[in-house]
Image (cartoon, rainbow, N blue to C red; front, side, top):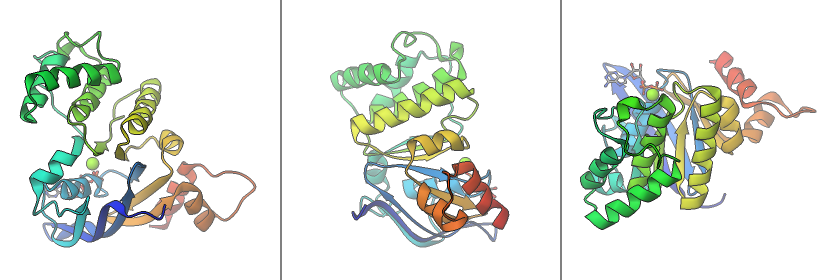
Length: 250
Ligand SMILES: Nc1ncnc2c1ncn2[C@@H]1O[C@H](COP(=O)(O)OP(=O)(O)O)[C@@H](O)[C@H]1O
Ligand SMILES: [Mg+2]
């Protein structure tokens, strides 16, 4: 991919209480890709996403999202990025459709556009039949799918999906990953996807970044990382093996 990155971080740093949560991160995400953002809990993934969204200011370094500095143009950046939060809260007393209508309103959509997009988004995540049930009755997988529908309402150029498979069983995880891949293709969306399900990440991501303790220890196409670090073998290495390799080194 010899194109310009749609997101580019240079030496991006965030210090909390004297300790770097994100430490001089150089990262590039390209248009149209699903970038796998990996690392153990506490590695600094969410903090990185928050800086890219303009929701927290970097201590050092820089980041550009479609050429914009999120710290200086937070509204413009937020309009372009859909964000599925790690632990999203819903107003559980609302129905799925009501919740989407609320998001549409927050995004300033007029009634007709809102209705259209809600219909499309529900359809896209296979939640049409459950749309008028209260969220409190939804399974974990249904709530995650509603979360994806909330992202789609904005028709964002970029989606940050922070652990969308957390708490899902393997079957629901598989379906969520396939959904993400389909949506990315259909809407030509760029996705930054954080998940611990390395097997599924390997199926839908070509490039990944591995973050450990605030540092990005690896970045690139999965096969390239395997070649560089594990040598050319007579078989294909799994992302798990590559991940564990970096993990043991740090
Ligand atoms: N608002 C905050 N104040 C202080 N420390 C924080 C804050 N947010 C995150 N941290 C710390 O920064 C580090 C990275 O956290 P986080 O970005 O949430 O990691 P990840 O998303 O990879 O699990 C952790 O040590 C965490 O405790
Ligand atoms: Mg996190």
